[in-house]
Image (tube, rainbow, N blue to C red; front, side):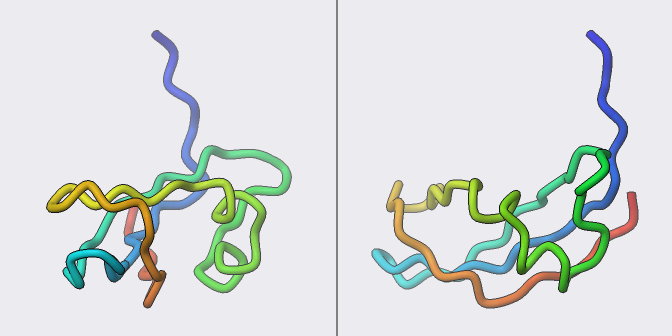
Length: 73
């Protein structure tokens, strides 16, 4: 299995609309020409819009993004 290079790593801070729990998730962005490389680029990207939320606590599918932190690769 070949690993794809990572352009950036982010921690998404989310709020579950069902159980009202605050959760976080690590999001690795694959390297590519249009890959977002900072939090501002990620917030405006189609890549982020394609991501799906799933609360591990209650299995809810509706969440609100409340913050993005960049993490070291």
